[in-house]
Image (cartoon, rainbow, N blue to C red; front, top):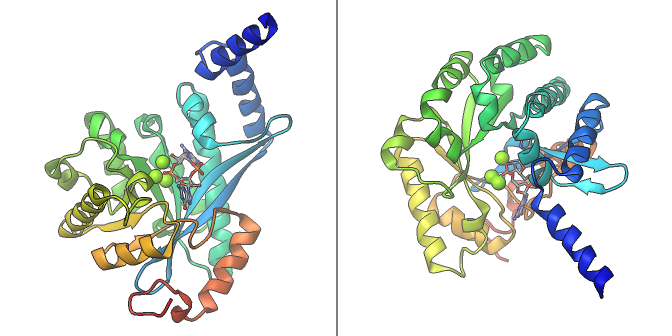
Length: 292
Ligand code: C2E
Ligand code: MG
Ligand code: MG
Ligand code: MG
């Protein structure tokens, strides 16, 4: 009984991920080594245009296969990295890997824009735009080859601090997307002022379309708002034909989710993109008016 209680105590302690817990410090050391050894991999998930099924970009998502712990989700290690200087290395690594992949895809005619997730801290780093500019030049890519995704909260709360970076990115021609939209506290006025091209509607609202009247209303009003500002809306976490059909009816432009494909390793993504490109549009069962 005592042993069990002691064990539970440890688990609770670990779960809290106390800033200086041994668990956490170990993981951070492992992460630093993993970056140096290039053990982290990017997986790729396409964004599709709902009315045509055309691919309109690919999001890069980090995966870490830890030698002892197995797969660790970015939801676990990215927030930890964000609290230290490690996020800078992580972001540089991700941008470099993404540009290298984009260069490969552009060479073989798959001219897809790759979206990279960046953190609040990255936008405070004045060298980020320069890093992108150098990387694009190195791989002979136009600025359209990459997009940055930042969460809604970043641009809303740190506006004054991030303005310079955002201006420099705009000057460079690199688009910004607002990630996880709906989870923060944006106002119409502020959204209008932000130099973003795309708004990604958080999966938590998208998932229950058709079940929850509230979520239905929220998504519909976001889509209308985004369109009225002349921006593109992207629904995240689309898992069913029914949800895709509702989004299409609402006029949501793009969608991403398991319904189309899970995030894939680069080699699988290359095959998927090549095959998808050749496939006829009516293959998509969810298109309005099609028989399912
Ligand atoms: P995010 O940018 O909002 O990414 C979308 C998440 O939804 C991804 O989780 C993706 O795998 C997941 N997803 C894909 N299809 C579906 C679906 O059909 N349903 C649902 N419910 N979810 C789906 P993932 O890969 O675990 O990443 C979690 C978060 O970690 C990302 O959220 C992003 O904020 C962060 N992240 C991932 N890669 C990076 C990175 O390279 N740098 C930074 N700074 N953050 C990253
Ligand atoms: Mg994202
Ligand atoms: Mg998101
Ligand atoms: Mg998210």
